[in-house]
Length: 223
Image (cartoon, rainbow, N blue to C red; front, side, top):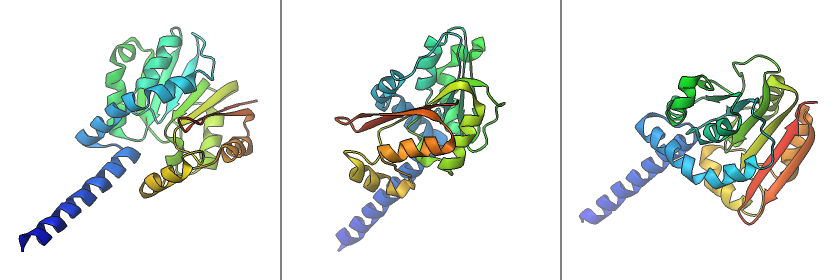
């Protein structure tokens, strides 16, 4: 007689856990959030390294990583921009803390700075960055069109935006759409990514896909 009750309780526990994990992926918080972003540093490593192959990083570059998560992307770019600066911004306090910890030596040296903020209102001056990166984050942005224009504002003339993701309407698009539906993610096709940046005012937009992995990389420049 107890089994139906136990089964119902177990199902409820699983549902609550899944809801909490869904929210943690979208906006990490607390101890669980720190664990999520730390795991992302490893799970997104190959994707990020592949995406970074599509841009040039000069030693003197000033770079912004939007949605910096656990801070691995910042660390990789800071290792290349040895005479420049890499800034990170994330709207999750847990991600900001994790990124600072992952880059504590560079933060102490003044070469890396991480702060809490939103892509919709970046706390930076116009024409400040040579490169802006966004890894596994843009499908959570509140307003894709205006947020892309906000990034365009902070890019220097000739500066580049690099968007990297493993979730888009590609080979595995229907699977990602199912998996990311609870997170209210906005998935786009390769053509929709191109149109998104071109409409926002970017030039020379290029889209690369690694279909065997279901990865996409999009770049666009400020004229």
